[in-house]
Image (cartoon, rainbow, N blue to C red; front, side):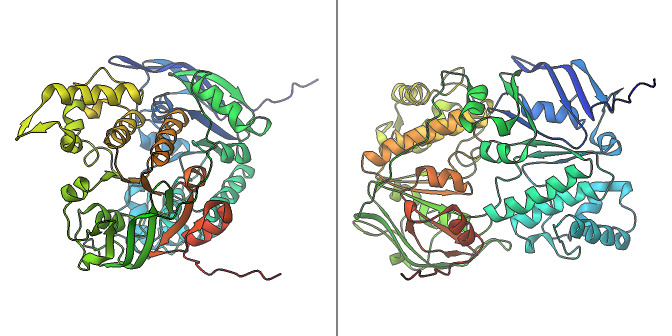
Length: 512
C-alpha cells in the first residue's frame, strides 16, 4: 500500500534566535504556517514580532535557528531573494512616492522584474480587478486615499507569483468598510493557496479572519490558539500575562460647558499634498472626551496645527477658549492658557530623539515651575521626569536615557504622562495609542479618563475607530477637510462613523 503524500508547511521556523546588545529580540521561536492558512502573529510592542518578520523577509539574519520553505532549508539573505521565493510584505508605513504613478511606484519596487511599463500597467489592472481592489495604474499616488495606497502595496506583491503575504497592522488606517473589502481579498487569496501572516493589535479582527495564531511575549512564544475559539480577553491575557490590566469599559458622560469652541474654521494647507479645512465647527466641553475619527490625510494634520498654534489662522475668532479668541496666540501662549498637546509624530515632535527624558520633560513642562528667571531647576526637572516614569510605568533605564532608546509604547506613555501631569484644562491628543500594545493602550486610556473626570476637556483625533468608541463621550469624523455631525457615542454606531469617515455625512431621519 502506497504511503499518503504529506504536504510540508509553507514556512517553518525552528529555534529562531536574534540577540541585540542588551536585548534578546527572538528567543528560540518555532512557527509553522501551512499553505492556504491565515496565521496571526500577536504580541505587545517589544515582544519580537518585527524582528521575526524581518527574519522571514530577509532584512535580518538570525543568530541561531533554521528556516524551511516548502520543507527545504533556506537562507533568506535579502528581500530580493524572499520575493523570488514568493514572499511579499506590506509594511505598516507605506513606501510610496507621491508624484509618481501607481505603475511607476510598483516598477521601482520590483526592480529588474518589473518589465516594460505598459505590460506592468496591464498586469496591475488585471490583478487588482481580480482581487476586488481596482486600481488605475496611471493615477499619481498623491491623488489616492489611504485605503487605495494600501491596495498599491498589496498589488505590488500580487503582480508576482506569491506564496506568503506578510501584512503588518493592515487595518490601522482603514474605515470599517475598507476592512471588510480587505478581508474578502485575503480570504480569496487563501482559498487559492496563498499563506498569509497577519500582524495586528485588533483582536476582534484576528478572531474573525485568522485560522491560527502564535502569541509572543518577551521574545518567546507564550501561546498558540485558534482565534475563533477564544475571546479577545483570553488572547490578550496570553499577550500580556496576568498582571497587566486590560479592562477598557468606561462610562460615558455628557457635559454642556464648552472649553474649546471652533467656529467656521477655514485654512488652506501649506502642503501641496495636504488638505484644506472647510468651515470646521465643533466644541469640546470641560469634563468630556470628544473623539474625531478619520482616515489619514483628510485634514487631521491641518486641524491639529491650527488648534495647537503651530499654524496661524486668518480668522482669529475661529478658535475660542473661555476667556476669548485664541486664534492669534502662539503655542506657548495657548499652553499658558491651559492647553496641552500630544502630536502625532512621537520622535521629532513629541520628543527629541537624542535628548534625555529629563530634558524632554522640560520641553513642554517649563511652565510648571521648572524654569525660574531663565534658569533651569535641574533637580525639579529630574524629579518631574522621574514622576512621569514611575506613575506611567515607563520601561527605561532612568531619566538620563535618550528618548530614542525607548520602545514606541513606552515613549508614548512618557509623552502622554508629561502632558497630563501638567494638569491641563484642555488636552489635544493625536493618535494616543497608535502602534501601542494592549497593556500600554489600557494605561493611556485610563489616564485620559482620569483627566476627564478631573474636569479637563479632551479632544482625541485617531484613525482607530474602536479606540474612539471605547473612550469618547461624543464622536464625529473628518473627511476631505470637513467635519461630520457630532453625536453622543451611545447614539451612533461604528458603521455610521465609518460612513462619516468616507465622507457620507447625510443623516437619515427615522420616523415612527
